Length: 255
Length: 230
Image (cartoon, rainbow over all chains, first blue to last red):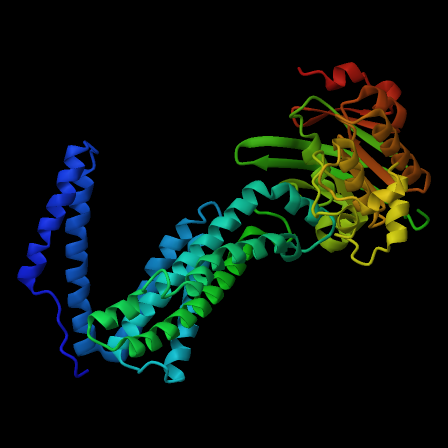
């Protein structure tokens, strides 16, 4: 890039701590009793980002593309734990979420690289993978939450269908549809209003970095489309895994 | 119900445990075809659990259940559930329209067949066009029964089918049981209603604390004692 990129200097970062002082003052004045939590969050954000920055630097310099994919795999595992927690009560929900994210994220990332939409460079693959996996994590988590709700409140209906000789998959089909529907609504909505209501991350970053808006939007368009695909595949695979774990071989709910 | 075949269940020392809790223990009994077997006992005695053993919504943790000499576990479970229809205690409608509900287990059901199924359960044929929202408890229960009858099951398992039902619904359901029995089918029902049990039962199984406390023809069973809590 030939543009001059202007980012805050380290003294500038330290100066921004003054803004934290404002937040602290409000919290203290209103006696919200979350001063400690706020301070922990501030320190955590700083430490986490410095660590990630250093790690990314190391990956870009020394580990190259294999390192980037390895880091993406780590992201899948972490996101799988987070999304899986949304389905606590569903057997092996973390496995389901991890499998879904690996499939959805992996397929989308691979398609982008193979089709040469994004260059096969570590410094591109890592942030793109982050966006894909972050979005898919939300979709997989929502799907799992709906699956869990279906088992708690939909049990009589599921058992009524099973008693009519339907297979587990048939008996659960209305709930599968509902879970996927719920999982995909946020990403569809945000795709609809992109640019109008939100100026999303990739585009904002490029514009901040000095890229022409009409160039920046090309990136954003690709990002939105890949997020849709990744969320759809992740939610679908997660739901299928969860469904398989819910029923036993005799087409009955396990729990 | 012309194509009903004889279906006899044999329970051999069947028991169900969940963790440390014993739900059913050492149940040995025969449920014969062409007859109506009533399962009686105080609430929490394991009556519904016993019913669920017969269509494999549950497997015994000890002992086994045989159908015409074959262990249930050796049969195709989906085919078994179509032969052994279970109507749950709480009527649960699955779709927005009565006709669609009747078609859940039988997608090829014609409107003509639907109307005749509804008539069997004492509902007017025009009910097929009704939305499922706004049905009374008794109407919903009868639609659920018709939905199961759509599979032409050889065995009907009814879990307290007439608790909280109006007189007409209760009589219609008893009529279905009598027709099935007359056709050589097998009816098993959990009932708290002593009058109904006397009218329908050929055999009675009395459960108490998960154990078979009494079994025999209804005239030999003390109903008041059977349903009373210990």
